[in-house]
Length: 331
Ligand code: ADP
Ligand code: MG
Image (tube, rainbow, N blue to C red; front, top):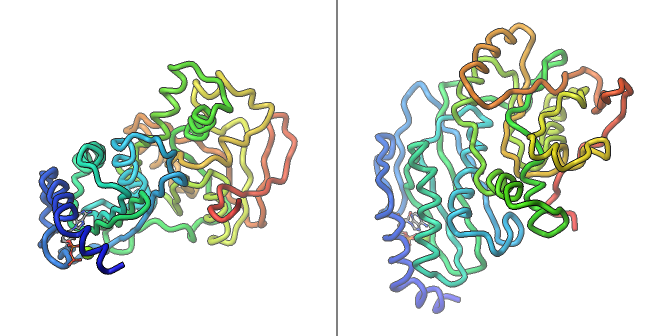
């Protein structure tokens, strides 16, 4: 093991790190020391707290094996930005841990292009990482900051709060069904859904505005129900959801007969929208925030003191629902 590692380390690991380092132009004041030493050094303003999160993408598990390198690069950063957005944090820098089966400079360049296309938008500096040979896997650790005490949590929703979700639900799930041939899509539909699957827009700007008004927040990576259940469990509450308020894209409603079930919008993962709760007293302020974003916020339900999740159907009937999203250890 040791010998193979040394052999691999010689030219190509160094070249890959150099290729990554040379591809970025972002320099943040907070990054005192970046790529090149044994560790990076970050300086956080005194009145802020450091917010840290890690997310890993494994080939064949988190993206199909034939996904373009550019999309993998983009998404590996997007999912991490989405986790910071769930906390209301401002992203600063990332560490990138790459496990590559067969380093190829074209693949790395495409990956790097996708990664930095998003890093530039959010002014996130790559400040370190690790590069090894192994099955394709990308792990990003992201560092951000929030004003002291203002990080949004999962555990702080209260009965009577309204439940909101940004954007639309189920599009990424529809893209996957299209890719595996279980759903017949024309090229325009496949393009729309694939864009939602491969290039999610992390809700960073919205989340910073929500810090002022939301009582709790989570990002939807494992499906609305599974992620909302985390808020409800940690806040020791239940909820009612309104079927007729669940936000669906036009492309989605053109294809699916929702009378047949809400499986995809409720349970499919990879939407990377925010689900958050707002107390009645903050609703007016929320309206002002909403008016400055083109992404819709839909009020999909209400937090209740009684445990459990109920769906109020369009016909007025009430149905108990079992929140289970994607479980990595379920076959
Ligand atoms: P060490 O052997 O001390 O762990 P490495 O040779 O792994 O150091 O890394 C050298 C430098 O390159 C470090 O600053 C490290 O953070 C950085 N680095 C390694 N891999 C990556 C990567 N994939 N992305 C960004 N920086 C990296
Ligand atoms: Mg190392």
